[in-house]
Every structure is written in C-alpha cells, then in structure tokens.
Length: 501
Ligand code: GLU
Image (cartoon, rainbow, N blue to C red; front, side):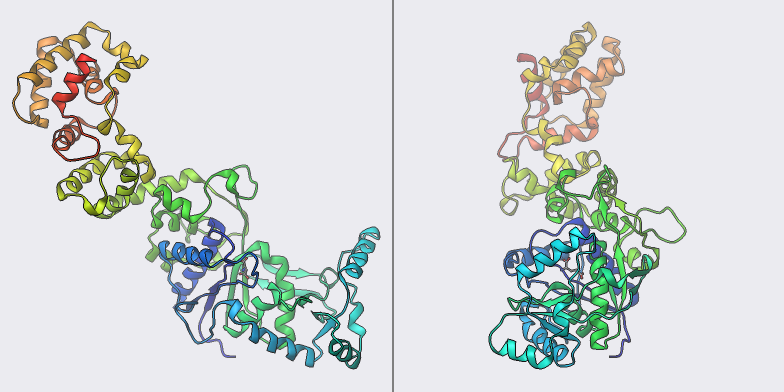
C-alpha cells in the first residue's frame, strides 16, 4: 500500500447530535487535509443498529456543511474506497475475519457470558486486571472447526502478541500499554456483529488513512487497533489524540454547562466562522503569537498537528461570544439580514421574509445596523429592539429609575417643550430637526446633558439609555408607515401616548 498523500477521516457514529468535541475533531482533520493538500474522508460508523438513525446522519452532514467543511470521499460523495457507511461494509469485515481465522491470527472463543463473568469476578477478587484469560486460545483448529460446524456459538478474538503495545502519538509522544492490560480483544461478537475496534481498523487501513485524529476517549482502544494492523501486516498510521474538552468547573463538558451541540449554537445565531475559529483555538495555537482571529483560509495556512496541545481545553462561552461579535461586524449586511429575520418572524414582529416588501427589508436593515453592535448572538436582537415594536409608556413611567428622572422640574419642562414642538410640526421628524429642537430646548430651559436627553429618551423608548438618536429617529419615522404585524409608533405617536399615559 503506497501512501503518497495525507489521508484523514472523520468517523462519526450517527447516534445523536454533533457536539463541540466531535466538531473540533472533524475540523482538525479537515484542516490537516486542506493544509497538506491531502484528502478528507467522511465515514459513517453505524454498526450499532439500535442507536444509529438516518436522521442523525442527515443532521450530522448538515452541521458539518454549515461549519463550512467539505470532504473528498463520503457516503453521498462516493470515492474509490467506498462504501463509506459501515453498515454497507459487513461483507468486507467478514472476508477479513475469515482471513485472520485461516492464518491463525484470530481464534474462535466459545466462552459463554456466564463463564466470562465468573472469570471477571475471580480477577476482581484476586486484584488482577480484568482481562480475558485466553482460555480458548488453545483449542485446536480441527476442534474449533468442528464446534463451529455443529452450531455452537462463538465470538472471534484476536491473538494478541506477548509484547508491550506501543504507538506514536503526535500530540502525546510515545504511548505504551503493558501487554497484561490488553486481553485478546473480541473482533466479532457471538451475535455476528463486528466490534468498533475491528471495523475501524479495517476501514482505516483499506481507506489508506495516514493520520488517525480523534478524541482521547479512544486512546485505550488504540493498542488493540495497532495489534489488528500488525496481524494483517498493514502499516500502522500516525495517531493524534485530542484532549478532552472541559467546562468551566474542569469537569468534562456536558449539557450541564450550557449548549454544546452545533445545532444549538446555530439556533442562537452564532456564525459558523466564529464557531470554527473558536473550535480551532480549543487546543491549538498558531506559531509564535497570541493571535485569536483566523478566517478558515488562515487556519488552513497555519494549522499544524504538532502545535496541538495535550492538556485539556476549557470551553469558554464568553470567548466564543466575543468572536461571534467580531464576525457579526465583519459579515455582509445582506447575509446578517437573512439570518436575523427568522428570529423576528418567529416572535410575530416581522411578516414572512419571502412575502415582505422591499421597504420592510430596507427598514429592517437599518434596525440591524443599529442593534447589532450590542449583541453577542442574533437571537438577542428581538429583545434589544423590543421597544420599537411594543412601546409601553405606562411601564416606562412606572419604572423606579425612570420615575426619579421624570420627577424633576427640569424633566417636566423639557418634555413639555419637546411635545409642543412635535405637535406643531407637520411631516416626518428628521435627525437634523431633532437636533435643532434639542438645542432650542436647551437654551429655553437651561437643561443640558442627561437632564436634557434622558426625559426625551424615556418618552421615545421607555428607557434612559439606548441607541443613538441620529439612527433611532429615522427608524421610528420610517417604520411607522410600514405594514408590519405590530405597528411602529412614530415620534409624534410616542410622545402623545407617553404624555397621556
Ligand atoms: N465512531 C467513533 C466515534 O464516534 C469514531 C472513533 C474514531 O475516530 O476512531 O467515537
């Protein structure tokens, strides 16, 4: 088998949602392939028929695509080493099992569950490692064949060599497991189902994988896999085991710590480029620097497995949010508009995107420009813009903080002067007009700064702090004539309602 190019794979089991740990594994594999000009292979490990679901596979693929990852070989893509779903490769495994049995590298184990359990209990009692005794190793070929032919059920075990099992790990260096801790592993269960360690090795070898990059929860499986490569006489690939991802309490990251599935991050309005950037930094850093923001192209250029750290990475939601803010600012406004719309539509604040007039989309674009700098995630936008759609002057007056501001004589004078100008003006209020009114009111009342602006802001928005008037005024005035599910009150309507509340 000639290995001329780097070939890596991501091999998810379609038993649930794609989480950050596996997504990082997929990303690192993809980066290695793209950095080296090699191939990235997607293989679906669905031999666990009880837990594997087609819908999980579909969602997995959707999540990987959303992250911007692409693969050169895979279930739908095809390729020279297919099929790429393990459930479609059972014949291949069977053929290889026959070969190992024929060559004496594997043997049939006729031990019953009860016998194995009794062995295990004995080992516990004697404080020995709970590994298989190797009892069936000694059964002669002819006896074994005869028992199998008579219908006795059996598992297939690998005959493991009497030597320590070692492998080289790019992240951890030399890893060695003493032989006593690794018993003759089962390759095929008595039910006929081949086990993970076996199929993963057959597939990695036949698919000519050069670098196995995966989570370190598989590190104890690796010696068994190495023994399988050796039994077949196949070259052993390089391994890179990625550290566990922890929560802020340094426990293994789980739902308890917050969202961990890729789908949930997408639903929150995290951009894929932010998540990719974040996941890349979760256990890797570019050479000679503290740089934190990388586009996918920059990651491809910079990424090297040698710079992946062995120490566990702590998932930092704040940093992810910070990166998302960064990418939201850089993103094309039309794209942000498309992504933000459903959050408003779901809350009944905007009509269906497809049916909306251009005027509404233009107005919504301004709304986003105004509020985007103050959010970490798109899902927070409706809340920030809530006061535009639902103005509640009574609640604004009732708020304790506002009441203190409004109770002053200066505030009363400012509001009266402002209302008088709004009432006598015909047509829309422009930012320029607003500015000149405020200047006039300043000279007429002597109020300035907060005294001047806070009461007006409360009357227009319900709160004493918020977005710049220059951008806010057009949003109110231009929103008012639009046919939206919730009518946007103009400056005049707001002031009237506020005064009479
Ligand atoms: N299907 C295995 C998993 O999802 C793959 C492990 C591996 O990469 O070898 O954990």
